[in-house]
Length: 426
Image (cartoon, rainbow, N blue to C red; front, top):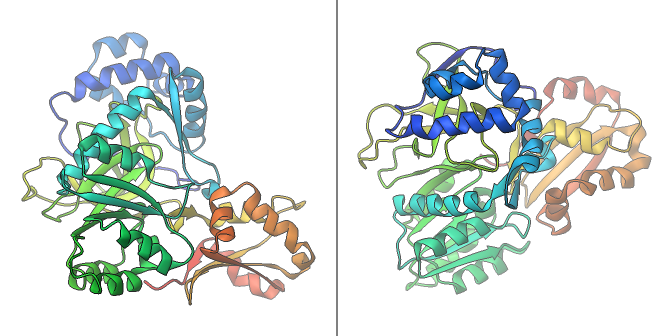
């Protein structure tokens, strides 16, 4: 979202409201007005009074509000911790996109999230007899909420497995669990996919049948290998730290279903007939951090027509991010965030070049002006001191950090990029 403001006013519903949308939305609007100054200010600008919230059509009132984005979201998140009752947990995004996005989670949020996640897993065919291994890079990102939901739905076994820097050891640990389903991040999977293929070839009695990927897109070549070489059914899960779960791919494999009884969803478009745009989320049941027309920062494209599975909820393809961030083993990184971190202890900010590559292993190369070479230890400390996710990836040897230095001529073109250059395969 940083650096991207919604300047157009063409907003359309992603799907028809379900029967209980108005009843669910009214108390969200009322609570937003009574407990959050951010929403009171937005409603005042739209000419909405406290009395209107009690008497007028809540959908009409919502449509009068400006999208929630930028600094207003961070103010809202701060207020949430002061106003929410019984906060039992905190969900936070990576700070490497500039500001850490935080969500206060109440006991009710946690309970409803587990119920909804269990429902999503049922949609993609998980059942009571499944043994599910959730594979992630480590304790900072381990999928505890997923294992909690899997236990809620009564699967036979649910594991949270921390991938190590040695892909072979990771696959040995994974296959020892003999899972029927793997839930993982694509870039975590791809670094050990060859070993997984060989390992399963040596286990003719393995029961692995499907894979659910989360957090980032899955490359087409990897998707094809999972189907053609391993015979797996592959599903996309979609969610965000600010909203928790949003949707999942069904067994018809025709886009990601977004469930309108959980969130009221809209897209902000540039032209009236566009079927793609910036996703706006209004939460209907989120207590700790209620969101009204929140600009999530994701571009989505609506798929036409009904789904063969029979679910009425709209289906989308997630096209990408509007903030220019990219995922590195599940950790979101951005040009602006890395630049701020590198210059955190310097007197002034200067140019930077950020390149991701995967020649023999994941690597982040940061190029800085040559006059900073003497400050290399300080820069390394700055990059990891307040970025625990990156610090874990570097210290755990998941990702190599290389600092390079160049003269002014190098940055004549680099200044124009102002983005992370991703040279990884695919």
